[in-house]
Amino acid sequence: MLGAIEAGGTKFICAVGDEKGQLYDRLKIPTTIPEETISKVIEFFKPYKLKAMGVGSFGPIDLNRESPTYGYITSTPKTSWGNYPIVPILKEAFSLPIGFNTDVNAAALGEVTYGAAKGLNSCLYMTIGTGIGAGAVVQGALLQGLSHPEMGHILVKRHPMDQYPGKCPYHHDCLEGLAAGPAIEERWGRKGVQLNECQEVWDMEGYYIAQALMQYILILSPSKIILGGGVMHQKQLFPIIYKYVQELLNNYISLPELSHYIVGPGLGNDAGIIGSLMLGQQALEKAN
Amino acid sequence: MLGAIEAGGTKFICAVGDEKGQLYDRLKIPTTIPEETISKVIEFFKPYKLKAMGVGSFGPIDLNRESPTYGYITSTPKTSWGNYPIVPILKEAFSLPIGFNTDVNAAALGEVTYGAAKGLNSCLYMTIGTGIGAGAVVQGALLQGLSHPEMGHILVKRHPMDQYPGKCPYHHDCLEGLAAGPAIEERWGRKGVQLNECQEVWDMEGYYIAQALMQYILILSPSKIILGGGVMHQKQLFPIIYKYVQELLNNYISLPELSHYIVGPGLGNDAGIIGSLMLGQQALEKAN
Image (tube, rainbow over all chains, first blue to last red):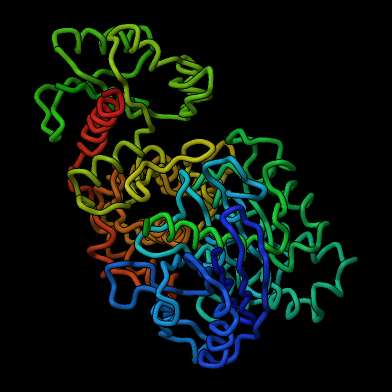
């Protein structure tokens, strides 16, 4: 049995499952202050005999094993979680091998193992919701370099009709600043779910997402792209994204049929938690 | 002894050397039609007893080992080289293990093995010359997915003073369309080397390069960035690039001191040919 934690900014999902991605029990815990949230997490796992655990976490996080703060959530704007040693605390509670990565890298791992990218050796998972982020598997391994990617903050060209200044406290009109859920709400005065019928909303949103995909494709060349997160529940976005990706790339590179190349998550909302389970499995294999 | 070919659009560089990156002989051959160029290449290598060969080539190229056109230069605008089976032809001539990748991936491999990124397990090598391209090493291996990256054609925001429409036949004002050597020449009416003293030229150029680096950093998180190619002989570009990278990222992520993080090639103009030698070494190791 493996444990999995999808550590998000508004909720923690805890689950137990097996290496086949089967989940046997799960619990949603609100993200409040660390002491409170983590003590409920520990309580949830206590009854289970686990072999390893995986944690897919909101970031930024420290993934450098040489660093004294390896396994920490680092400079997050959620102040009570800043410099929080999540992996060391779980290690102390459970004495288990613990896999650790970003929430979006975990989701990419879930999708490449059991989801829409199953059998491929690369994929990109992008989430568009209250924030924007992406993770990737490259030649079978989670993408990591100096640190983990921060793909939500790339630059985009402004849509010619867009007067909205952007919401990112660091970059104003970067991708997240223009296209995450809160930007949609602030620009149009209503939440995305109340704007289903407004074509111009989704045309602009699709334009920004397509630009991001163009950059990801030209830089990473993923074998499959998976789009998740709350904003992507607006299924009318997919054909708009295909249209703009086609227009922007202008046949410069040859891609598979876009409706098979850019898809929704095969694991639905469970990509992150199943990917976290796979992080646990990887930690177990590494420990043995 | 290993053979190395840096196959460029204007010249082929052939060399023989060893696994330590030492070069013993080399020859520059103009890129004309394939029959002519390749017969001179074959002639150069004939006297040597080689164990393997590496080819770093202009692209696009087919790197998919399952493909019937693996080892081909594919849809290049240089028409006589379109669909040219460079690796099969060399295999026929020499019956050796042949490593094959893009010229920029080869340069990244050279730099990570013996150059400015020596000892690191990731790096990005970007060349800015008659074209713009970049290759990368990710967790010790050359970046590859569905195909090889095409990082020169990413989108950038236009500099507010830039009225030049862009030179890319596919995307007009993508990075290469705005910032490669021919774009500089067409925008300002003179070649870059004749514009050394014009600050606005290099300010604009640095702005575009910095935008590209921001995207590469946020998407790939390389441990070191190496800038090569003819345009980067303008050393005054480096501080301008540092200034804009700093401004654009706005402390969102923590990076090493930029003058150590974004550097010129440790191997000078030999990054590509030494990297091609390393491609040969990899092919030899794989064959044994």
